Length: 482
Image (cartoon, rainbow, N blue to C red; front, side):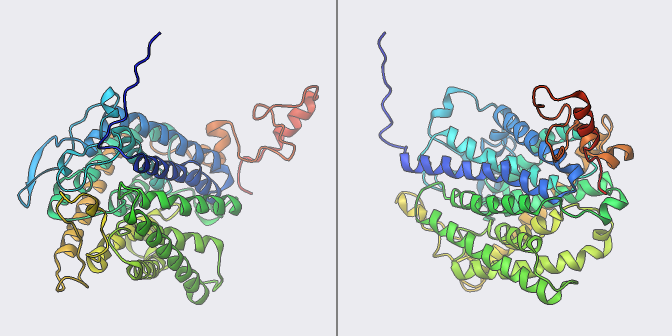
């Protein structure tokens, strides 16, 4: 048998860039599984831990299938409905088509960005997977708003619809060369596309589905702080791929984005802890407070990581942490915020933090930071200039605000319509009898089966164990919070 080997292309591919892109994608994937699954699984009451983690795993799988069949090209393909923005070809969403053919080995390409940035030095498959893990983490984030009462069956229907009708539009408008990208709005790694949309969707979903049981709201302490710390640590380090992968090259800008990410996160964590120590009701530093501050820092730097310098990153972390802390303790008790049961406060740590980060790009963006386009001398120079630079121009802040309003409006409207539509066929909310029990009623599993780990039907039992022992262990399975 004779084998002909296809030579590696001499141009258009870089093994270093390809390796970094796939590594960054894997780091982002780890943020979802196990990162968010473990973090959320530890934050909720123990009767909801299995349900929460399974909803995360199932959503990750659903998004991958949808992404391959049609959604990737809706976010990053040729425009479906063509418009213009500032004289440039534009649009609101891409043409749906599959990403399963041999063309996936061709050089990656986003049609509306051709000529506006250097060609990608890796295949379409690498870009597909990198963007998939971003799409997958977004519904996982807003899952945190509806934990403890949302129907698992409804979730399985909502995730594909939401990814198709909401996420792809937000992504195309800002990342795929769509309308707001054409006007100059930027979102480096997803402060708007991912976090602002997740915070908005979660808040709307929580309002539509209704609150948890009163006793669960009043006694909803985390079931495992060790799980919380583990998941949070995975998120922090995984974010190096989240922001470090978005230059699409293993170069100076990737390193700059990683450093800025960690600076903003460290400062935000410390600011939250200090505010807890001086102004919180308990005036004590807490692990949960530090995790909130950490997440706020990670989120606020996400839209700005490649556009601000180190001092700007520190300012973003400090300013946003203070704003979100005040929102968490003050705004949550006022107006409609007090009436909506956002289980894990996603609207604050992701929605408000993402909004702040995106707007602050319009103030702190340093035009001398972004340098990766210099790798291709044929590509026009590109920079983003904040209010503190460039003769105090308001342009960037204006387009950042416009893009934010569009993301909020589209996400809120479509999330509401999707939930109401699905609710016509499947109940969105679990019955109160199931809410009393949680995991055992929904999945016939519990996160901590028993001290002996031999509960019937849950884990293997040692050979020869008497039936009475199995029944006794099964009777000890905790089914609700004390």
